[in-house]
Length: 267
Image 1 (cartoon, one colour):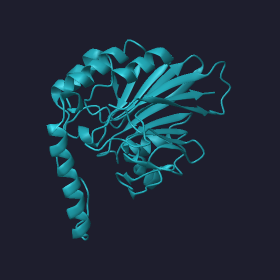
Image 2 (image 1 turned 90 degrees about the vertical axis):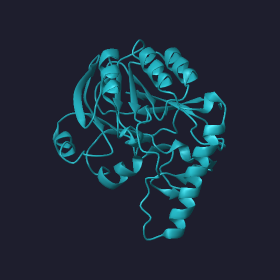
Image 3 (image 1 turned 135 degrees about the vertical axis):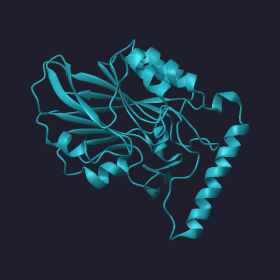
């Protein structure tokens, strides 16, 4: 697996904080071995760890693209999807998903700092044993839910937005006063729904950096297509930060697009 890097961002909260708050943002583990990311978090000693989904693999293995009016595009996507699926099954064990990788990561992460997690599209069929594990381990799962968080004199509302059934919860979250941070797996959902919402900081993943980075853009960005704009980085004046993800799930290597841990300092 390719070497991982740390990408750092600084966010101005507009609040009078006595000391900065350091957030480790991880995304898209996909049940792969990410012990190097875990060691990076340990060395960074963050105040909080936030995970924006796709830790577990709990979904139907079918492409989730709506190209009914574009049969050629649908055919190409299906060929790429199933071709990649078959190739990864033939690869050595380190490339393959195993839920113990996700469990080990979370068990160790909670020893380092409070862990808050939202769900991604690969977790649409989370199992009862997964929920029980998260409760037992001490991970705070925010499944279309929010909670009050305090670190020193920094108090804020933290929300976790799933990629489904968020319609009833989201308006109430947006009405809340004070500083708001949102864990939202898909950055295109932020672009479509939240750019003028008043959320102070949104953390996303899902894109895997576009797998192959060309300049500042990814080659193919889920939900955004070829050379999608929001594959990796900071956007909308720092209100949206997109992680390139912690794992490589494709048969194709990641070119110019390393796996990453995102470190955010809120001042």
